[in-house]
Image: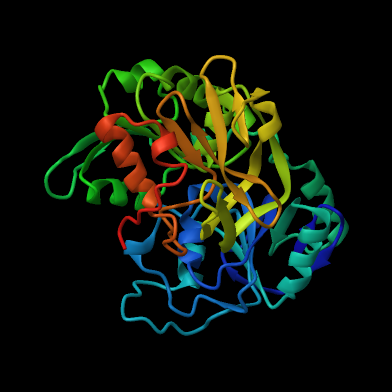
Length: 386
């Protein structure tokens, strides 16, 4: 049984592990890429509903995992495939959920779940093979913690620092601060000639700068960005000292470090078909998303002379470089006077389209000659990895 915080309940068939799990319910609109969704650390403590009608039909492949484990609390689908058709598959969705202790439910109307979340916002939820009384499970759901105010980065970060070597000749030395980094980000950095040092979420700005990096990537991650106080302090200490590139949670931490506030979106952006417009030249990117919070642009500082630009208290001008065309949400920030930029979506595109891969080229340009993002992120339009 699946029960949402407002009392809406769904009965279906169990697959995966037996047990009871709680988390914030969100829906994901991707037609494929369920393994990347399941293993994305940004989905920690969430119960994910997939809108695709059948999930699991190409199995699971060890090489496609974005972390070393399944991260979601629960998994909700219309139908979980019973046969796998993929020569790369190393296991099945059902077996991997069971091995990870993750409860899944199928045979319910995921359209109804999605509509409930769309109309009323993301809610706490519970999915159980044990507690099958609605009122009893609902009481437990309402006693479970909310996503707001939770710093979950400690649950997904690396315990110890480690290295990823560049593919071919090393051009740059990059430090990645791991708040829940996806493996694809590390592979892309290595492929563009970066020797990468990955540091845990507890790293301070001093810890990062001690490695004398050419640039710093502030990674994605789960939870409420406003609660990640160490991350905010770390990014603030890096601004003006070294080129910074933030992704997803990293974008929100950049906004917070600049003095802005963040807000929780009604049901967030979870999928691979979000239209994002690059403001400088009007180019629209179809992009991969997984975030439930966003930076409030009007809290960045005083309006500057340039459009969509504010003057911060300590770090000069910052512009909203990208915006979501569905809800006008901030999707990108670029500092114009210090070398730092970020996007709230996922340019590594795992899963998803590759429209935004150019951002990794922009990061390389920032590290190469110290240009500010006014010359790169705000509108270069090159494409990496095409």
